[in-house]
Structures are given as C-alpha cells and as structure tokens.
Length: 315
Length: 131
Image 1 (cartoon, rainbow over the protein chains, first blue to last red):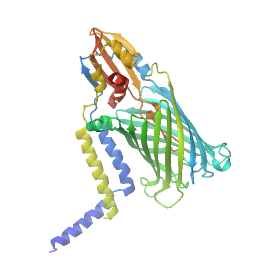
Image 2 (image 1 turned 60 degrees about the horizontal axis):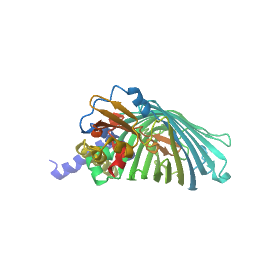
Image 3 (image 1 turned 120 degrees about the horizontal axis):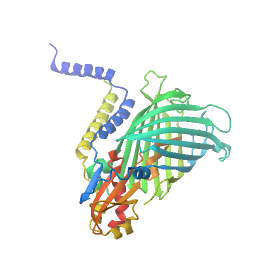
Image 4 (image 1 turned 90 degrees about the vertical axis):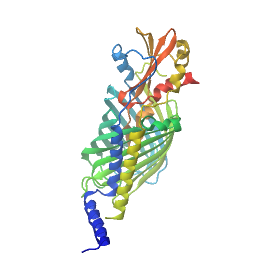
C-alpha cells in the first residue's frame, strides 16, 4: 500500500506530464490568453445610446443618407521619420544596408460605413550607409478592413521590394482578426479615477495564407505562417500625449510546431499630438525567439500629418 | 511538469481570469456626462455659440433637434507599425439635442458604430459649453 505522500507526489507528476502534452509552449500561451481575454470582453453587452433630460424623437428614419455621408471617411496621413539610432534595422528586404529615413503615405476610405474600409500604405526607406537620401526599399500594402461589434478583421496584401537595385522581394497576403478593449467605456471606474486618460487596446491572430519569401525570423530564415498581435494606446492626457506599445509574433510554417512563435517584434513609443500633427519618438526591436540570430532594432523620431476630406463639418 | 510551463500557465490563466472577472463586473452603462448635464436648460444660441453650428437641424413634433457629429482623429483610427500600419476603428459620435421654447430640454448620444459605446467624442463637442 503506497503512502499518502508517495501517492500525492506521483499523482502530481502524472498530472503534470499529462498537462505538458496538452499545453502549448509558454511562448504560445501568452498571445492566446490575450486574444481570449479580449474576446471575452467583446462578448460583454454594449450600450450604444445615452439619454438625458426629455426623450428625443427617433432620429433613425428621416436622414439616413445624410448620416451615412457624415460618417464616411476619406482620409489618411503622411509621415517622415529619422532613424537617429540604428545599429541593425536593414534598409532592404535582403537585410542589406541600414535605414536612415522613412516616408509613408497612408490613404483609406470607407466603402460601406465602418464595416468595409479600404486602405493602402506606401512606405519608403533610405539607406544611411548610402547617403541617407536615395530610397532603397518600397513596401506597398493594400488591405480591406472592417469592424463588427468589438471585433475587427483585415485582409491584406503586402509587397516589400528593393528600389535602388534588383533583389529579394518579400510578399504575403494575410487575414487578421482582432478584439478591442477601451477602458473609459468598458470599465466604469476608469473615468472617475482617470478623467483625462484612457486605455485602448486590441489583440488578435492572423494567418498568412499566401507567402512568397516572407520570412519567420529577422535573419530571413523560415516562412511565416501565423501572426499574433497586441496593441495598446495609453492616453496620458486628453489624447495629446499618448504612450503606445505594439507586439507582433510570427510563426514558422517550416517548424515542427507551426503555432510556436519564432519572431517577436515590439515597439514602444511616446506621441505628442496637436491638431493634425503628431510628433513621436519610438523604439522597435525584432528578434528571433527559438534560436539565436540577428536582432534588428532602432530608435526613430517621427512627424505625422493627418488629413481627411468629405466631412461636411469639423468641430 | 516543467516549472517554467507551470509558471507561465498559472500567470496567464490567472491574468486572463481575473481581468475577465473585473471586465464582466465593472462593465456598465455608467458614463461621464458632465458636458451634457451642463447643456440642459441652456439656450439654443448659447449652445451654438460654444459647440458650433450643428450638422443638421430637424423639425419634429416635440421640438427642433440639433444634430452634431464628431469623428475620431485619424491618429486613433490607424496606427503605424514596423513597415506599414494597423487599422484601428473608424468611429464617431452623434449628439442630438432637443430644443423646446428655445432651450435645450433633452440630449441623446449615439455612438457610431452603435456597437462601440464610445461617447467621449460627443462629450468633446460640448466641453467648451461646460467651462
């Protein structure tokens, strides 16, 4: 008859071994938990209407067209950034050169309210080892996106190509689903304690269903299959000072465990906004997770100018 | 069972569970409404003076309704990431004010899209009126 302590010790061992076979590696648990957490928030009931004083007549019918017109957005932004400290962030898809400057144009328009939006990013980099000015890489992104309740979706095609010489092109198409959290609206005590601050965040997962040389690590090895993303904006003061962070994990379709992240990219930045301008300083680091390898990182100072048209009024 | 797997499992499940509970219990329909309260009883002219000209003014049997709309800044609706951008949420807020006898007697905020429950933009329209 085995003793109680023997049974307890061995039971725990067997349970532990069983769980070890069921549970994914630790690197997967965190992103999955984040997505699960945000999904649970997405299921919470929402209150789309607030009333005060005498009840108002219904505004639904008489001006549906005008309302849709007002909510339709055609806008974008232009940005320029200087990578003032860049020991290793490459200036071409084949990992040659070092980025000096970045210029990007973002355009987007609603095709059907918030449910279907098209956007494109035209992103250009220069090589600081070749005089800073001449462009060395052109990344074009074309995407459809939309939201349903608190869930967002995106279908995107991206093509990263060298500009100053022929060479490797990295191309993929992916789908991405995210769930969103907004502290000021989702947590009742937030606004009482932090009247001038807010926390917006989203997390999700995506699948690169088409991949032509889009790698799974910063050292250009493997082929990306899945991505896990998480983003947070902490509004420090009335949306004029914003601390933000972003994480992106890739998995390798050639790895034994295709769900296990092989690359982690993260950004932390501080943005100052004034009317249609935003000045931000941020740091990005891209690193392998499953093996030692190239770490691409930089510090940048960025100026962004936002614009929009087709809005009849701005308050 | 490996110690680090147990640690990460405990941490992440605990985090997800506890924050989910907070989210479910704390989420409610209570919101800030200081600016809106300040407007009830104000004259139409004073509201137009501080909040600007409404997008629309509609005549109804109950009185005139002033309609305001504010879209979120583009910086909130698209974030820059590594070699491109990430889509945010296109959203705004409709604020309808009921006017009777030249005074504001009712207010209604409606988020757009309605599923987002974000009324802060409406509050921003009328913040100058609360000062």
